[in-house]
Length: 117
Image (cartoon, rainbow, N blue to C red):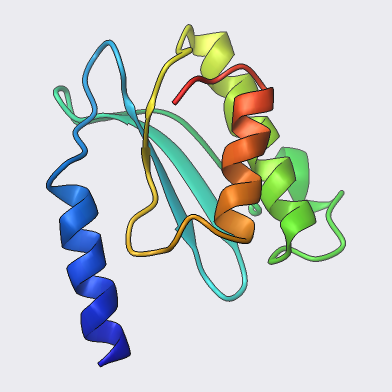
């Protein structure tokens, strides 16, 4: 039941969100142990920038890789990489997760880093 609700939520979000050249998609995936973020141009099928708790820039500096502190660090890193690539506006793809907790912390850190949703 819970997994079915998550799939329905994921499909509902996915049918509304599509990344373009002007506004690529910021896709966020959160697992029990790690946090991942990618900026994707769906028209070309290319990942423009990516960041995660596995990233060399973050892996050694984080005490825990699954908390809000890690989410904030990943959000700041993806924003930095996006701005370097010239991406300032994105469409936020939260997948099946609610905009709450680590997801919200990552999104707010990305906004502070210079990305507009």
